[in-house]
Length: 368
Image 1 (cartoon, helix red, strand yellow):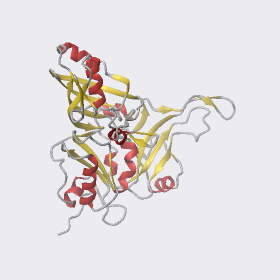
Image 2: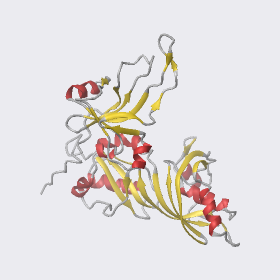
Image 3: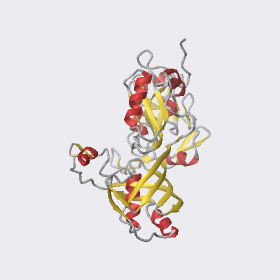
Image 4: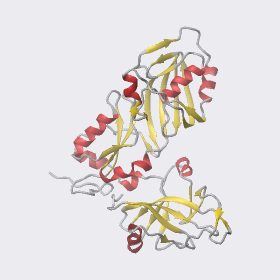
């Protein structure tokens, strides 16, 4: 008996192809890629991607993009993530977790809880982090973990990362438990290693890791691997919903036609028939996207702006505030992504706020 798909994740692209975001609770053991392959098998289609992998040891939230929605990976890969971690300090291994070859094991006295708290707090905020030798980072065409397994570990350069929040939960030597909200590209294994070293214990190794949050998406019960295609389709979030937290510009048919041709669309204030709607998100996520709403008007939070320059007649150019938005047609379908620009003095741009498409999707990706 056939089952129709819900409105929030309709079929798009080739007949029968699923498009959207599937949230999974990864168990410990399998690789993230093995779960992606399983989703591909259940869906019966090859176009399946992810929002960032988890090590085999780790558990928790894994996002899989299906069908045309895989084209949104660039917008979703950079989301902040939150982890619950258990670290064994004083244990140094080849992989910076407990699965690796043990290099050192501390046998001396342990620091106090106050010292452990202070050490964790010292990593809060921006920092420069050296990735683990066993990672997917490429250098000179070589993948780090493959080179390390071959006995030729790469010299990996430190990278800028940010720990937005580090909550100390417990200290039972030699194990520290904490929750971390971090930027994309942050390695908790590296934090485990550096945390143990900062305590003077020669290193640290990650014992347990559970990803609880990816951007606005939260780990909840019922996110195991779907049993069949019907369950998978029922659980899909539409591409429009996958961009949760992005303000929306809803266009008329005529405006949508112009945008699909790559042309800018002038907006009026108040803006009927176009209107700007903000997704319902928590205040922290809302603020991180730097948007504010005021009775349908898009007002300036801290929008991105170009550097001051000169206008066409040599007059000072005032930076033009820019807001990144998702573009929705009158049927509720995702058309693409764009920028709302409020031209500054001497900018040479059209007068009044306008929408400039930055990425137009050739076929609508879905209806929420």
